[in-house]
Every structure is written in C-alpha cells, then in structure tokens.
View 1 (cartoon, helix red, strand yellow):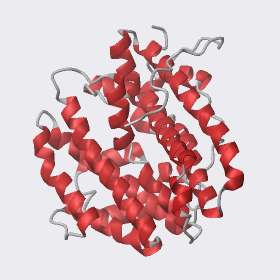
View 2: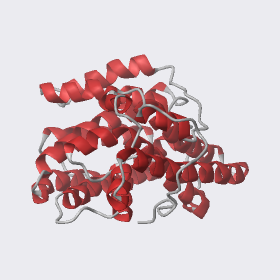
View 3: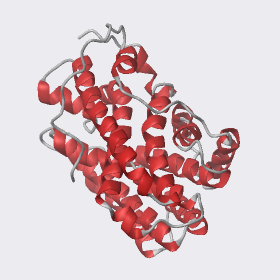
View 4: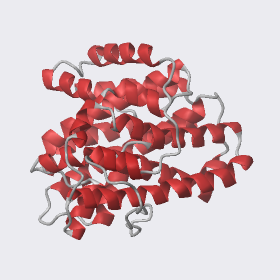
Length: 335
C-alpha cells in the first residue's frame, strides 16, 4: 500500500532545545489546525458510556481502566468539532469500539496470530454479509453497523463497511509482523499502520452529516484519494509520536518512530525528530492540495475534506493530553 513520503526523514533544524519528548514534539511539529472541540462533547461522553455498558463492552475492570485513559468521546470531539450530535455519537461509539477491539486483538494474538482468526472473521462476516453476531464484540459491531445504516445512504454505509473491514484485516497483519522472526521494515510498518489506524471509516460519516451524497467520481478523483492518504498518515503518525514510549516499553513494533529507531539505530528522540519531519511534509502537502481542490468540490465533498483535516489536528490535540500517553512528558529529549 502506498504511504506518504516514506523516505523523507530529514530532521527539522533551528528550533530551541527541548527538555522532554513532549516539548520536542510541540516545538517542531507543523500543526496548522487550531484546537477545537464539539459543543456536544459532554453529551457524547455520557452516551458512549451508556452504549458500552449496554453492549457489555465495559464489564471488565481493565477495559474500564483503558477507556478512562483513552477518552474516546474526547477524541471524537477533537477530530469532529463541527458535526451534529447524532454523527458525533456514532463517531464516539466507533472510536470506543475500536479501542476495545484493538486491545482485545492484541491480547488474543500475542505470540499466536492464528488465534485472531475467529474474531476477525466474525467481524468481516458482519460487515460484508450481514451475518448475525455470535460474541459480545460482534454484537457491538452489528449495532454500530445499524447506526451507520440508519444515518447514511446505502453507498456511504457500504464505504464505511469496506474501510472497517480493512481495519480488521490490518490487525491480523499487525499481529503477524509483531510475531515475525525479524522486525518489520519502515515501509511495511507504515502500510500496516495506515490500516490499523481505523481512520478512513469515519469519512463517509462526515459526508452524511450534510444528509447528501458526494458524487462517486469526486470521491474517486486522484486528488481526493491523495488527501485521504495524507490525512490518515499524518494523523496516525502524530499519534505514534506520543505513543512511542508506551509502545517501546510494551515491545510494540508497528509505530513509525520505533521503526525509524530500528532502521537508523538511533536514540528515541532522534527517531521522533525524523518522524516529525515526515509528518510535516505530509501536512504541508495536505494543505497545498486542499487549497487547490476545494473550489471545485461539492458541499458534501467539502465536508469530507474538513473531516480529514479534523483528524490531523484532533489526533495531535488528543494525543498530547490523553493519560494513556502521559509518559511522553517525562522522558528526556536529550539523546
């Protein structure tokens, strides 16, 4: 799968020294998207907790602890500040579901990727064929699919299901790479990361926010496809900056900063700096391409692009404040 400027790893220069990794990121990362939050955030926080409880996803203490440290409704608010309450709720529910599913997949697939097959095949059967679920996680996914189908057009719901299936496949690739004989190369890491990011399923929801459908030719245009790729990569690579310390301590492999560290044999602060340079290139290309194509887009297309920008800025503002990645503020930026 093509990714964004994989070989552009020049570090930025000329900035003052930083004491911690968080300060290093804040000082060097190009982030033109201002912090915004959705006015319906507080309602979404309460509603997503109710949904998780009703679907049986928050029964286990470790799951509740994970959700407290990741704040899924807050990520939904930061990435989707302009959508209505109904769309925000679907976004928040899906983020919470993906956090739970991702952690469960990591536990189940640890050391034995084949153990993931039943839960992943169930998800694909629900999304592709409308099969009835047989597990708690499957029932939650089926309910989420129902919410999407009720708000979106059939074409939008189909795109949501397809990209959600790609996310599911990505978790299997991640488990295989994580348990391989050799650490994955940087290009393979970014290809898998673009799938496990799980960002693309949200784009049809932003199109549906206006209750109209973008022209299929507009969505398939090379410029729109490139904007989607840039958005996903910039968003998830930014999250990788802040999660690198946690992932390194846990033995994680599929993280761009850690991939640079392995490839270059360098300290983590240097690898983070290389990753920042790669993200900055992607963000600037996104800005330039967006400015060129927006005058030609339909209102629904504009909403899609606004949602793409929202994920770049929202991931940054969420990652730097969420408790799950708090260790970034305690690790020295000095190599």
